[in-house]
Amino acid sequence: MSAQTDAIDAPEAGMATATPTRRWPPAAIAALLLAAASTAIVLGAQVFQHVVGIPPCPLCLEQRIPHYAAVPIALIVAMAVQRRAPRGLVAAGFGLLALAMLTAAGIGGYHAGVEWGFWPGPSDCSGEIKAFGTAGSLLQQMQTTSVIRCDVVMFRFLGLSLAGWNVVMSTALAGLAAWGFARTLRQSA
Image (cartoon, rainbow, N blue to C red; front, side):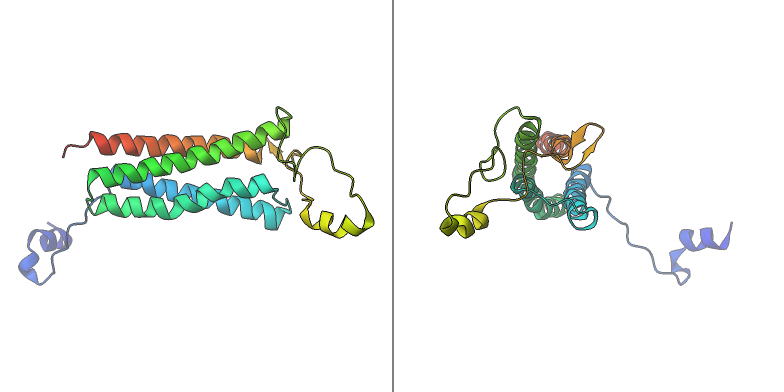
């Protein structure tokens, strides 16, 4: 036997016993993955905005809101799972996360449809640029008109715009949240 094995076999030989660590349950890991992925999506959007120089349109900014909400919710759900909170509370947290991710996917799908010309977008960032009218209303018009267009794609990767990729990622995260929801409900009481 080696000295290390002897120390493990005989803790009374002067070595303190290690406290057993509790494994993170799969549902907690799913919640942490949701938090990490939403954080990565928001940070990626910030990189495209501030480093690459692609300014966000109003719809781009709206797509971020569900991810902003999902990060703290997912962290709370992970802690609730780890601390063995009631199943109903954890399931409600996963349900809220699934709803947030489906909302992000829905806004992204709407935005992608505007980019592809399937339907008109919001009047403040897509469609025809209106005449500015009289010189007196020019300043007011300039202050209320968005320069960043929602119907113009600034970047594509593998044929999808950033809005399209948000649909793909948010839908996958909604699936992960639904898995966490179902797993939580299937657990024995």
